[in-house]
Length: 346
Image 1: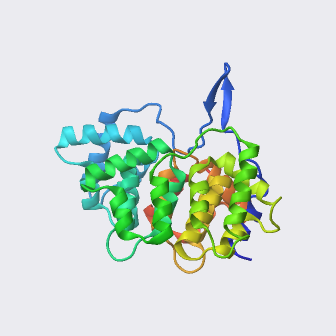
Image 2: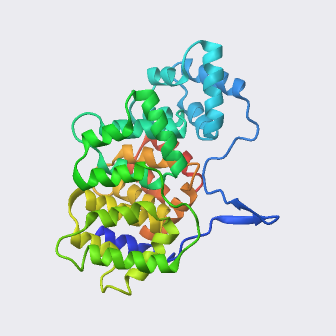
Image 3: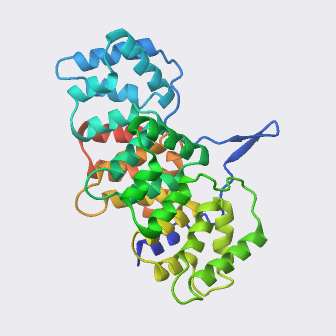
């Protein structure tokens, strides 16, 4: 059984898009599914002083560093950074780098970056040096909002003095480049309204572009999969079953190859169930020999104030084991402790 089949079998307990809002006095308010929440008795000056003592202490007090970083929201961490630099004349991330090592250092530095700068950093790392990490490019662009993508492009240009689009064009090829550039346009429909007629029309277009023609009209797949909202695409996937004997994800496997196949299938997965998409990422990072710590860090840090609670739930539903249990088996020391802290209580 392929991972694609396992993915869609694993999320059958949730076949419809979830409405993540609750009504408070008739005003929709998003539910919060993050595992990291603002610290109620927050004092940036006190935290900065505590971190300075932990860094200067003999042997470094990693437990104190963990306790502060995972119990403060990103916004609060940014305030701590400002106070720390004002009181010490040094940057907190640089001081932490000087005393920490390996993956634990990576997590701490990542937690000190605001989400937009962290995403820009991940995209630069994914496109720098020999080879390109295509999975990271797709993961970020397929799961961020239009506004977030616009901000990422702005910060990327500001920090690295080049346009993200140019880097993508230089480092990728063919249909995969076209798909990434389409996502970078940040014009995806973000409404929750579902148009059944459009879904039926799109399903027919996708069928004609793939299964029902010699060769594959990849541009049609890119156009629809990068522009429609998640709920709209979910409806299209359901409608596809009325025009084909093959489910759309399987059709993509049959019709496409290489980076563009993986890219479009990941977009389908994200549209169907984003937390399940990330749960699978985490599972694969710890499956078999060795652990992809970079994936663990990237997902847990970037989703800790977005939907990590839901990712933890999906992980248990899909794999029959708690995410925290697998982290305990695959990591150790302070690196393990800070990752578990980001996951929240089991």
